[in-house]
Image (cartoon, rainbow, N blue to C red; front, side, top):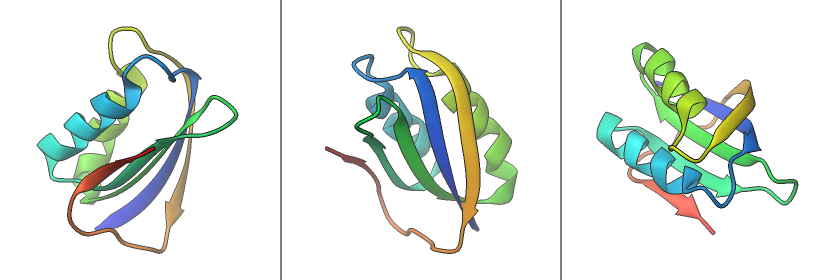
Length: 89
């Protein structure tokens, strides 16, 4: 299991991006959280099996119908999350 931090930029706030991300993570059994950042980006921190990475990243790139994803910056983290995937408000 590896943990990644994704910073998603574009039109990703006010378009149900966090809800979409939680539903995607829940369907894949991924732990972590998603939250809006003050600069208009969305932060996603997710602990997953390495074979899930490409599918999860593809979903984040697509997003919900109203989203426009311009870029995703990715870094690997040392921490691990267990349990539910949460929306942080």
